[in-house]
Length: 401
Image 1 (cartoon, rainbow, N blue to C red):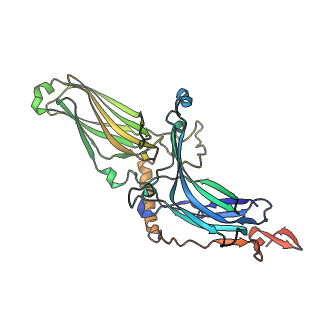
Image 2: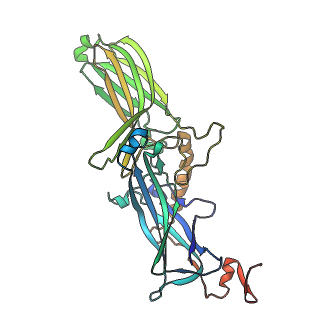
């Protein structure tokens, strides 16, 4: 008989326990695989083998956002990887082809790699689930349960699991150290910038301190320079096939602000502070309702964020451009990190991360202390009771306690 297979997480919580990207929380997927008869409610199911694994699927189609190029370009490229290890949940005893069962509850835990122990792909922290507009690139995860019924029949059942990454939160100390950079184009003027922090989420304020200073060795020439305007922008750069032979780059400006200056270069230099708000995507529709999202993807208030997969990579840059007369324009690109959560959301998450790390201290990846499997075989006395049935006068009837 064919089986009904379902994966359920821990009570009142998600499959995902811990925070991927933060090793102290031992990120893992916990739950149990439930197998029941599909047809006839109480007809036994033959089961030989049950395994479960977490699969990452990544696809790219760089031309998907163009109606004309979509059909002419190369087809969608796809890869599938197993994250962590495949777990054997049940195998029937040696010498037996299959076990006849009425119900099975098989607990499992899959540990998500957290970046320790070398550069092998299997050890890298998996990238977050993400779908870019027009599906130019996407990454999603599925729990795949394989059920072998006898020699011939093997079926796979997939259950989507959205995964976010928490190692780019803007509240982490490493992102709150000021970053500075300098750029010279023709030895007359130096453009210097300083960023108070360099991880941003949706609607976070981005402020940049800008300094234009003349070259003291060419002071007379530098004083003739007129600063016309200064532009600050945020660029998104998507690199498809970044590990392959022919990477394709797509650059898009997400936000831009310009300050008209129109002054001659002072001896001491020109200082200013420019700011803009990191753009966010409105999750609500015209009527103010948040539509139901896709099971595979968490709902983000940004269209993309800093991430690196196998087939694509997304990077963000803060660009500062100083336009001048009597000197060449200066363009400075400073890498920044974009996080899918805003600064307030990151602050709220910190306490929960701390608690998850305390909870994970009691968990051993080598021996996760799983509860025992519950298997009701077809020849067990009162086995039908597990399915809410009973034999009354030789007839199967619903069990009324």
